[in-house]
Image 1: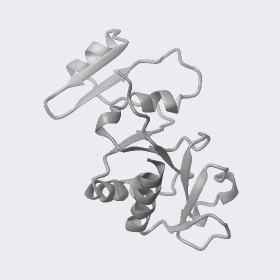
Image 2 (image 1 turned 135 degrees about the vertical axis):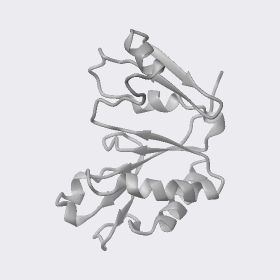
Image 3 (image 1 turned 120 degrees about the vertical axis):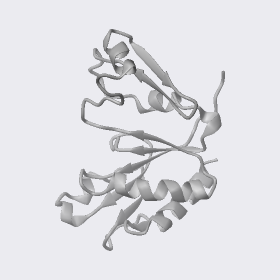
Length: 173
């Protein structure tokens, strides 16, 4: 099956800036505009999506390399990669999505990827903006005016950020 490639847009920032908080507000706004959103979230933690004691967890821990848990309302595929010591491949992860049921994939994290990015910045986090900026950053969302030639968005205005993402998405088609 030959799927279309979905546009990827990263929301990148230092820990504590509010990436998840902002996405929790922006995603419903995009959905209201009939934009179907996928999400890839990078975590530095050893994460589990199922719980000890549940059948799916016990069967996966028994040695299945991939476990697909399904119900009428959702399904999840978990893939074990214990021997993977290379960086995550964002393009590969994005290719796992059903491109026919989505319009774009938002990416939380992955700040070193060569994809379009909106950098979130709050001076009170105490880290420099310059370390977030590369040639793939298309806008900066902050709670203050930034000295940059990039478009500036108000990090506290999810509607404005959703407008910007919608406009970017329309141009990317």
